[in-house]
Image (cartoon, rainbow, N blue to C red; front, side, top):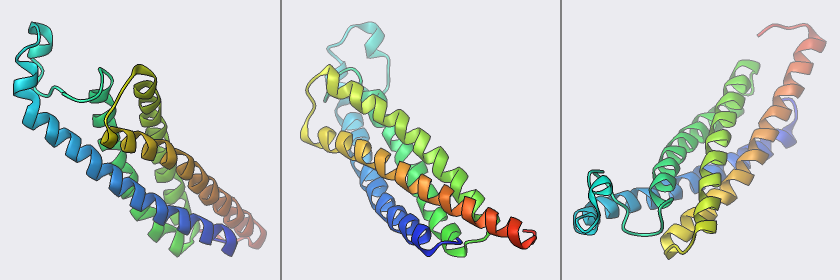
Length: 170
């Protein structure tokens, strides 16, 4: 990256997001495991359309299943995107910054979708403490991913301007 400030800011937020996405993966995986373990006895009392689904989430409300599954996908994509973007930002070439910017943008968009479901779950009703933690972490990581994506894009623009000024190619 052309600027050391944008490189250090992006690296700091990428490491922070890496840790938050890992915690999201752990909590969402626990929730899926808990739902699989307790879905038979919880879903056996339901009427037929809900009874045929293989995973029934016995905690939270009706938005919990969608939120947990999407947050698990978001956590995995965000973790891998942050992991690869750390290497791309450290390299600092124009091609690697384009890769970091695109993967960071995709992770941010998935995180926004997961944050929307977290807000829907909060507005729908009660959830347990582990689900509250997952909701809060999803909302926090959506903001930090936005800042990280902005820092990567700022470094990308600086590096592209430097390449245009010097006339060098990638």
